[in-house]
Length: 288
Image 1: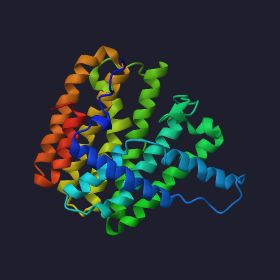
Image 2: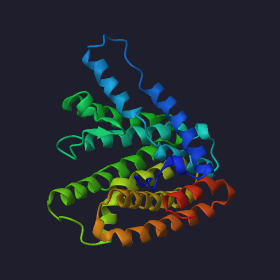
Image 3: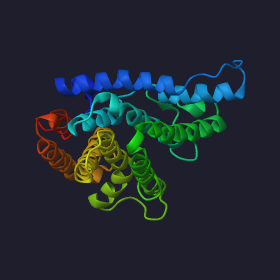
C-alpha cells in the first residue's frame, strides 16, 4: 500500500479543509476572470498563449498559498473579499515558477498536478511565454489592492526575486546538478534552499493578506515570520514524503514540528481570529 502524503487535503482538520475548499473555489473564479480567452481563432498564437496560461493557473492544486493569504487577511481583521486580488496574484506567481521549473533547462519534468507539463502540452517557447505572462498578471492583480498596492508589489517583488525565490532555485539546481556548492552538507544548507524556493512565497502570502486587511507594519512582520516558518515546515514534510535530502531526514522531521510550533504560537498571539492559521500550522507541522 502507498503511504498517504503528509500534507494531504483529504486528511486535513475540518477548519483547514473548509479554508482550502473555499480558497480553491474563490481563487479559481478570480483566476478565470483575470485570464479571459481572447476572441481569436483557435489557431491564433495569441489565443494559444492564453490557453497555456489558463492550463497552468487553473490546473488542479491545493491552493495553499491563496488560502494562506485569505486566512492571514481575516486574522488581521480584513474581509475575505479584500484578499482575493492578492490570493490570485500569489497563485499566478506560484504557477509561473512551476511552469519555468518544469522546463528542460531546469527540472525537466513531464508531469505536473497529474497532467502533462505546459511545455509538453504546448511547446517550450509557449511555456516560457506563458510563465512570463503569469508573472506579469500577478503584479497586475495587486493593483486592485488600492491603498495597499504599492506595499504589496514591493513585498512580492522582494520575495520572488533574485534575493529569495530565484536564489533558492539556483541553489537547488546546483545541489541537484553538482554545480557550485554541491549537495547540502548540513540541515541549515537545506533550509537555505527551502527558505527561498518555498518559504519566500509562504511569507509573501501571509504578509499580502495582512496588507489587504490594512494591518500595521508590526502585524505584517509577525505574519511574514509565520509564513516563512510554515513554508519551510511544508517543504520538510514534502521532502520526507519524497525521500529528498535523506541524510537529514531525522533532523528534518524534528525541524518540521519545531517550525510548525513556532508558526502556531504566532497565530495564537493573534487571538480567536488566528484560529485557522493556528490549525494550519499544526497540520503542516504534523502536530496533533
